[in-house]
Length: 118
Image 1 (cartoon, rainbow, N blue to C red):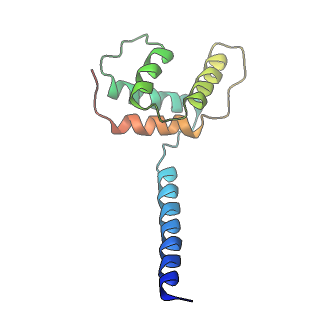
Image 2 (cartoon, rainbow, N blue to C red):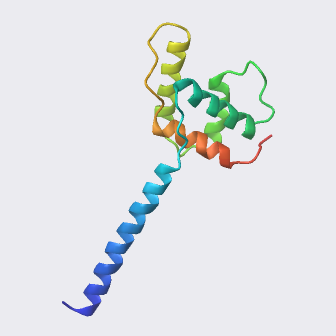
């Protein structure tokens, strides 16, 4: 095999390995709530961190629309499904969902890393 092809092959293999490690590390650093309630408490604290003007009695939809403007790249349909499932459970019409999804946890992580917005 030509030396150029060996170098190219090594670069591709090590690049793929590095990409996999970075993706794995990003996944490992997501918050790990023990319960559904704790997941939504984490979200509330993260929202209050980013939006210190958030009023008591806020609605999840209002605050999530503000967060969506900051991170439109997240999987918002999944986050909205988590919110819908939680609300139908909280108001007594469905059993509790098992847990929130990865996109919800990515939102919590992203909000925690942001500074306050006004």
